Image (cartoon, rainbow, N blue to C red; front, side, top):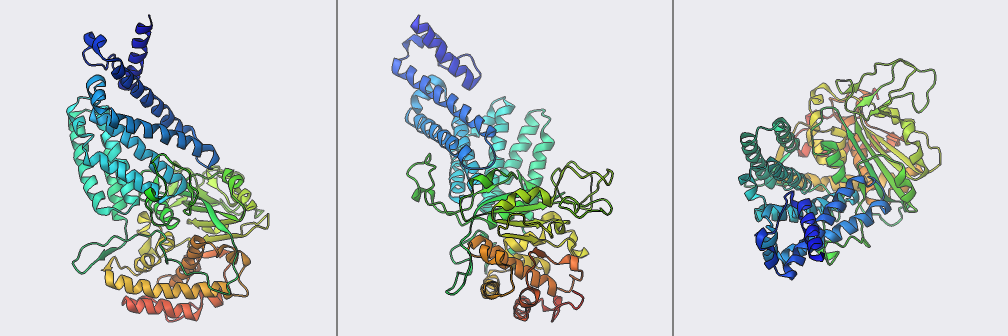
Length: 574
């Protein structure tokens, strides 16, 4: 009969969602349930099932581009918006007839938080990071997972632990360090309770999660203190007035940074979730301060970005973004990875003969360098060679390589005549600084926060916020002068001027020049390999070795009382 088919369909939905054979309370009295309440349960089951199907389908989407995934994200957001509102409007019926538990509400909220987080990862729109935080925070405040520990189901406790791990990642990205410490303490207690109650095989894995997040927090190279000795947390995203403005008479290009590929594979570097500390820092260096999403859209499911000004960032290397780059757009490629060196000398000097960076962590690595155990005629297949990036040069390309073999990209071929710049890290650091590499690269630290890089190279790990502000004011003057040098130079390669019109690229180039001058003046940096390089080369005499910049660096050193660490002039042997 129709009634029997209806009941079977209803039970089918319920079994899928709960893994049990009946969800309606009082099975024998099911005929007494009003039809409208049955429909409410059926509609809820449909929305829940559909939301899970769409959410699970996200993992099959390509990790690049916009056209392939944005519409799918929109549909997924839409169904979760309906599901969330539906359970709010019909909570009493769902409690009585479906047996809706608070942890199930928490699961829905957690999925919405994950949606916002992954949308942030694909677009770098920090406003969506704030939305993810709102949902994760609500789960904790409303104790949605509180009753999970009372049920004899370890898989439910794992859901709670994973929620904590995701919440911590979002808080790290939003620099909510005080809350991170509280969440880590709560997660530690949850893990201890979980491992005591259930004889599971994943205890070591969860303890590793705790170790990773603790190391990630400790990797911060500087402690800022106010007058009350309280720690001051600062943001390193681009803020209003944070970059020297374009001035009248400056002739620069109109290119705009449209997409970025961030790759991290450094051996033994601190990491949490999918982010190494270098990736984490570069990600923030390419973002603006978060804005309130409520001012951009009328409902959480609205994903149309008409006025988006933040930078899309992808964590995978693929040539597909090139086809979607608008006119006058730039692709940035950031590589932070262990160096792979060629075995012996090659008869040729092609784009695959200088080695590159490692793309597979399960390799033989000694002292941060890849050791090849194959004949000289064979190339390391898990190496990203300069030649592998040639296809990217069809469009304006900005490359940053932070590696012990960054110089493999020094003679990068520009096959298509488009603007191309490569900023390359030192390949060797002074011995006294090599033990700090696990906490992140010094080169990336300079590009992320130049003053932190300066303090790190001077061995300063804490300072007063008032002095920090004074030093930042001096740096603003230094950066203004560097900008003037770049735009007024008659011998600089035009690619730098083409990229200078974009705020993010302008700031990266200025910070790079400051890093070059600082390390050249520092007494511990004696080898040429310890200095950053660039392709095309920047003019040394009028820029990285400029007497004006030397004066600025020494002035900053005097302000911080570390002038004894720096030479009065450039090294004679370079």
